[in-house]
Image (tube, rainbow, N blue to C red; front, side, top):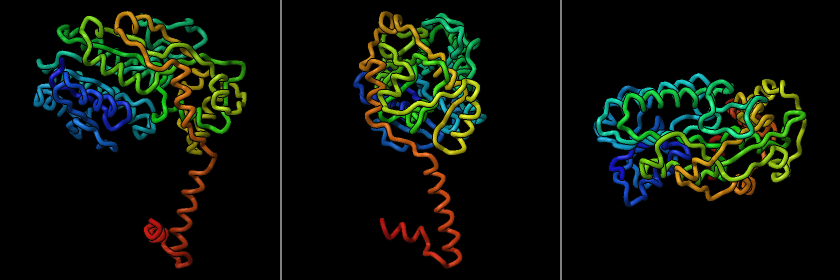
Length: 355
């Protein structure tokens, strides 16, 4: 069992939950959580170290704490969470390279578990009905996060060849969903009217956020003969986009597939939703992965089916109202200007009095 576990990306939901779950286990020694910003929620039993994955200091950190198990949860799925697409790519790629370089030099490292995504398979009209782990990567991958995940996996594979003594596990998750997580897809399902590609109704799979954490903990602590290798992870069953809309009781509007760029720019401008490149194509062509290895090799059975995972999100899904955030921002700016002119009281002082 691991003595010292290093978990990346602990300031985000899944990384923080995974670190806390590992720290709660009696068979796990010390848990070190790292991220570039402090976590907003308490991480009981986790020693937090503020460090940027892209910093070469990672090598000294791994050596200093004699880390034997690394759980890489730091690949960012949405550009907004990273401060833009350029920053997202740099964190995902350069950060992973620095982390693996640190692991390669550290003789104490014995296991590396990486959270990847089924987005590496992409979405196209030429896709197979079901993706197995042996499917080629990069050919169909068209969106930024999918490209990043595919490149991350290539670096992980290279690391595994250079360090054959290290147990390497890569889990490719279907879309993670639940009552707490926020992604481009949860943004889409929170729209008051959901645009769908005209003439398409893609099949989708989901993994509940709790099952995602459980699977990563298993990858970090399970028997080597089970966890080593690449494994698809998804809840049982599928839902189509139209079925998801019905569960949410959201109206649909048909829009051509070619309108993806316009939709992405429009939602970004209105701040209604994060609409990552390639997401609209997934809604059109869908993506389903084979989970035979997940059950037979990894020995993992999700608690939630695809439908149950989506229903847990739908039960608490909020509705994004067009223009509310922009209107609120504009009103606040107007109040500040009028306060400076002496026409209205200072809005910050008013807010303090109310609290």
